[in-house]
Length: 271
Ligand SMILES: [Zn+2]
Image 1 (tube, rainbow, N blue to C red):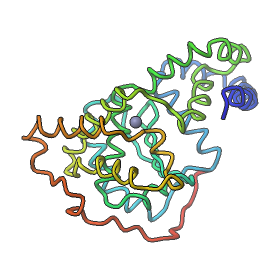
Image 2: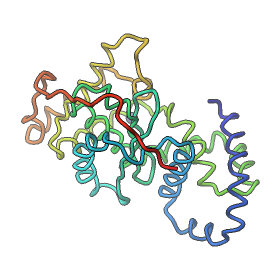
Image 3: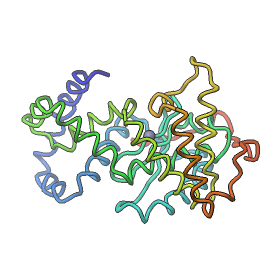
Image 4: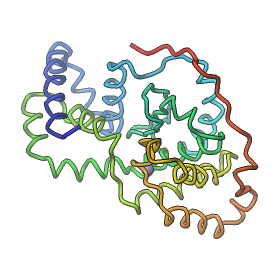
């Protein structure tokens, strides 16, 4: 979606929010006290919920919980807001984290990964973006780029957090971090992953799966996080340099137990 389309959507959506804020006069004062990361995260959550994408309950959570609970526990000391994981329904396998601690796992990703370590590796990478405040840094950069557009939107009355959240949501699927930012998230993610007991080689295996997939099947996750040999090499170097943490993990993907998820599982959506 182009920025101009996003802005148009933001205008439409925020004009109704302005009405709500006018009737709930205390809301904006409360929001001002909050960490902007939490505000933006909450706005994205509200938007995804309004679109009916967030899965409230599903047996898929039984598959996800044993993976995300240890990740949240291992990552929590590095971030000042609680990590929460939500399943969302979209067609392309993907995962994305927003500022404030929310991590969204697209249900189809559960069917794409070959083992739990690949899923854990991906989610640890996303959590690392939150720990590093990468989205905030990128948004600040983009805010400058689109200052006139954002300024115009704010004049109409919505809170800045809301406008940024709308922009972010449109861009979550095409966030372009630099290779260095991605590689740094890989390394921190692998540290978090090692602390959970899941195999940090899972992320390397996922890169290899993506490389082996034919172009027609390459999911969004790959174009968001372009696999390249440098990132794999940086991970391998990190593993070698920290043998006390990583030597116990088997680099062979064949050592991992397959991740089997029943097909056509029911999903109840938040609304
Ligand atoms: Zn990334």
